[in-house]
Figure 1 (tube, rainbow, N blue to C red):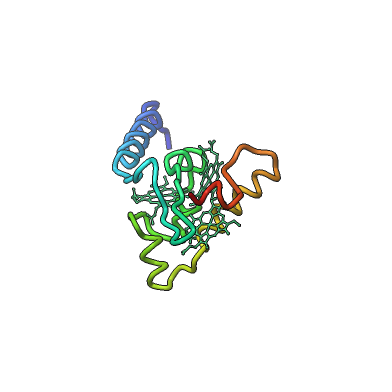
Figure 2 (cartoon, rainbow, N blue to C red; figure 1 turned 90 degrees about the horizontal axis):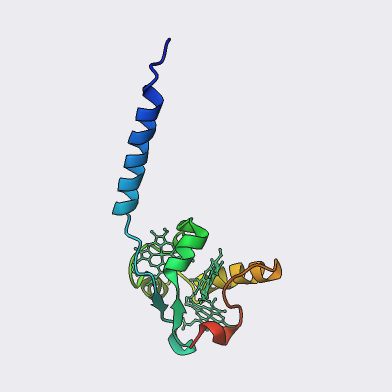
Length: 113
Ligand code: HEC
Ligand code: HEC
Ligand code: HEC
């Protein structure tokens, strides 16, 4: 079958418009968050920086939904263990530090204030 010349450019433009619309609709959440950690002290978390650097939301959100306060609620409900999210944060920072890459803190008091 003979394709018309305009078919692929038009399709590409439609797909790009749809992707842009989706991105605009996506709720990114606050660029800077504070994660409570009981007596250990709050953790300041640059959410926006991580979204830019990591791209995949599920690196973190496979553990808890994209809602404010979800970590605290799930910990209270016993669905998340204490320090379960922290292990993901610290684990990634450790691996990247060992690989000599720019990353976040690995020692307790650099996160807990
Ligand atoms: C490195 C970990 C990480 C990544 C990656 C990440 N988030 Fe989050 N996100 C969090 C944490 C931590 C919270 C705070 C949860 C809480 O308050 O208990 C959060 C909260 C949120 C919230 C709740 C609103 C708010 O402002 O508190 C939204 C919406 C959200 N994230 C969207 C996203 C989207 C969309 C992506 C991907 C583009 C993403 N997140 C990637 C860790 C991450
Ligand atoms: C990369 C940042 C980061 C580092 C480094 C870190 N933590 Fe955490 N920690 C967190 C976050 C975020 C939470 C809250 C989420 C959770 O419980 O998984 C937390 C939670 C905790 C909790 C549970 C508090 C509660 O009552 O629920 C304890 C205890 C704790 N951390 C101790 C430590 C100790 C000890 C170290 C050093 C060996 C450490 N943390 C290093 C980010 C970090
Ligand atoms: C999969 C890897 C990965 C995970 C998971 C991750 N981080 Fe990071 N983090 C990074 C990288 C990469 C940077 C450096 C970003 C940059 O400035 O380029 C960073 C930077 C940081 C910084 C320092 C920002 C600054 O301005 O110096 C903090 C604080 C931090 N992360 C906290 C956390 C906490 C808390 C969590 C868990 C909720 C977390 N990170 C999860 C990769 C990760």
